[in-house]
Image (cartoon, rainbow, N blue to C red; front, side):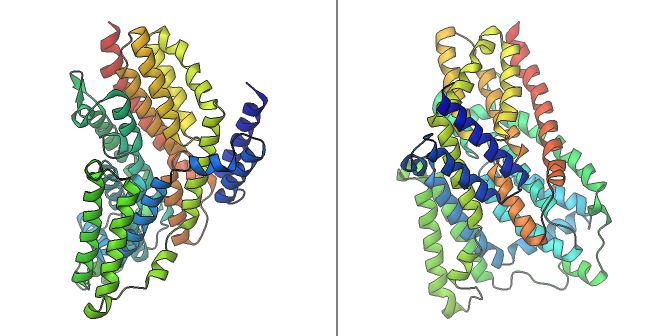
Length: 447
């Protein structure tokens, strides 16, 4: 390695340690890392700016604003009470059901968006029962990040796999005569949710009680949450139309961020026009913009620049090429090394650039060496998604969830408590997925 590469790697490692431990604010740590990379020549300030995926940030800002309006409709409270009614006041079951819903919704919608849309449901029930919100919100973040690779639409890794390999939507359900991403991840996901249900049953959540009046309200007997159905209709319609527009991106031939921004802008315009004539009880735009977690946006931007610095210094390429001898040595060894080394790496490195680099390496090896690339493809995207749930550096959706939960609780979550959620979630999901991967996608092809 060249001196610049060594220095770049050291800056990245120190930055990630500071981000994870939160000795100083993670946003400050990440931005300082970017400044130091620029200072030592890992990249220029112009390159750092270009490495940021402004399209993704525009999606986040736009949907965050829609989520803010959604939270004012009363729908999250209604959904929370309905789910609580189904769970019969069992808070561990309630949290598990909301988390389970997050995973399945994230197959079609970005994981951060899912956190933004479902967090108000937890906040509402938290106010009734008085439990701390950060743990349940983290569970939503973990779950929303889990199923993003199950289908083609939910996250960037499956879309990158489609770009590199040409696999289409149905290929994520059944491929090469065997179950693929959706079926395998769904089985594992349900088992992980079951494990966490029992974890919640042994926690303080199981001790939560509700007084009789609040219980009637939660059952919908004395409270009507959706007080202005016209306002709720406008917001939901605006959100649905924006999502439909984003799903038709190829037809419009514009970036998703532009579609999200346009949809949000039109929604705001309609609300501002109708607010006085129809008497919408909604804060002004300045207040709604103030509810966006701008620190999370800055954190996302800094992570993009940091990983861009690694990529520009060719460190990701060096790591990717390290896998080549193992992949050539045999299917079981190759997939196992790829899987178990990728998982901890993406736990601290925002995974998109790393996964894309390795997808090209695997594709090129398949063409030159004649190996079956699909066990490697699946192993990479699964480990790359599941492993990223380890820290806020690997999965920025966790940073959003953590920030929202701590803001609601008014206190910080310790690193030990944070890992009490992420470590078991990651280990269980990785081990179960690995077992199914070997049984379905590795051993049949080694005979």
